Structure formats: C-alpha cells, structure tokens
Image (cartoon, rainbow, N blue to C red; front, side):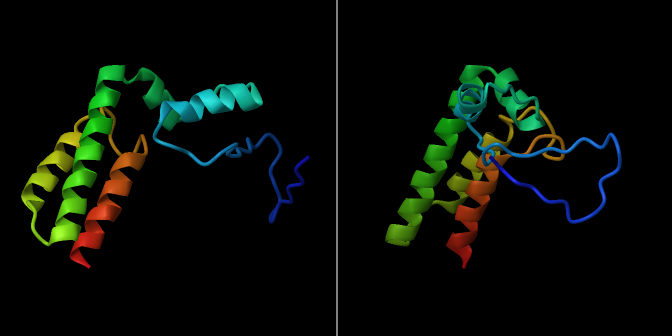
Length: 120
C-alpha cells in the first residue's frame, strides 16, 4: 500500500499521474510495467519505443555503445577522435523521429553527460 499526501488542494476531475518505475529508454521498461502492474503505459516515451521499428532501436543502441567506446578510449589514453564521437552522437540523434520537446531522449541525455565529462 502506498500513502500519498497532496501538498496543495487538488481540483475536482484533475488527472493525477504517478510513475510506476523510473523511465528508461528501453522497451523492457514497458514490458516490466505490463507484467508487474498489468498496465500498458501510453506516455510519449513508451509510445515512441513501441512505434519505432526494431532495426532503428538496434541502430540507436549500437551507436550509443560505439559512442561510449570512443569516449572511454579518449578518457583512458588521452588520445582519441572527439570529432568521430560527435559524428556518432549526431547519427544517434536522427534515430529519434519526434522532436525532443515531444519525446524525451534518455539515451542522448546519457551520452551528453558522458561527453561533458571529457571536457571537465
């Protein structure tokens, strides 16, 4: 059982939403919701995952792995091709068909965070 308290008055008929789990840029998140809560999420992130062809998701994941490999090499050795990592990042960006304002791009956020560490 979960007890939730409002910190302000809630208008009648206002829809209240709650995350069942932290969002993840992975279709397994949706599968987990369905199995655990018997719930099918219709948020923009889950709909994007469901509607994006598997070959595009596979490409996105491969680009993310390649980006991480390139950045890790740069961090370990001090030598690396930051321009190539940026090209890989740009290729990952175009795997998202919807604008970032409509669908969160969690994979890209992680990559941007990793790249920021290179410049710090």
